[in-house]
Length: 277
Image (cartoon, helix red, strand yellow):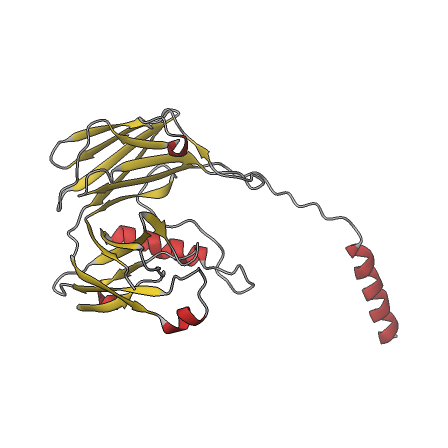
């Protein structure tokens, strides 16, 4: 009788599995995405405004070209931005200051963006950054044996001194001949001062160079809020989506009204070196 019962139970379950299951996957609410930056370097100030896509949407996000954008500081200065003043095809959705300006260390900057009569705000403080003392380079023997890119097996080494009397956060960007490079699409190069220590003594870059290349390294100061945002984003990008992975969630940010993205104020220091055989 027990075996007959089990057979009947399995039969019922198999029959039930034949019934079609319709998933009710809604498009989901689209969100405004804002990426902004103020630095102490001329020409580095911008705000990018776009719109997130729905569940079934493919392709690039929709760029928003009719937003009202302004940045203010805690000294009472106000900097209006205008959409794509150069009318460049690859700059749709980018807003630049009407009057060029540079950020100042110690100041707090406030962003205001209006899209479809909805106001989105953010603020971030611009902290000082440690300077890169020097750059050097050397051949990476392992990369030379099996280079991922033709003749690119030189790694650049960074030397600097990090002040340990303050709590600091940093982001690094690496350029090859003026083109921003990453090792892969899920890597963001950022750190706190505890991780890198007082002596940045020959830390190697994650990308490789060939003879004749110009290598450029930039170091950005980050606020604590920016560090948390990039930490969340890094975790999201590297999640494998497996059974035991955390459910995906948006990065914590400093924007109001449900907007995605981040508004960042940073000091920047850069060094360049030409790679020679």
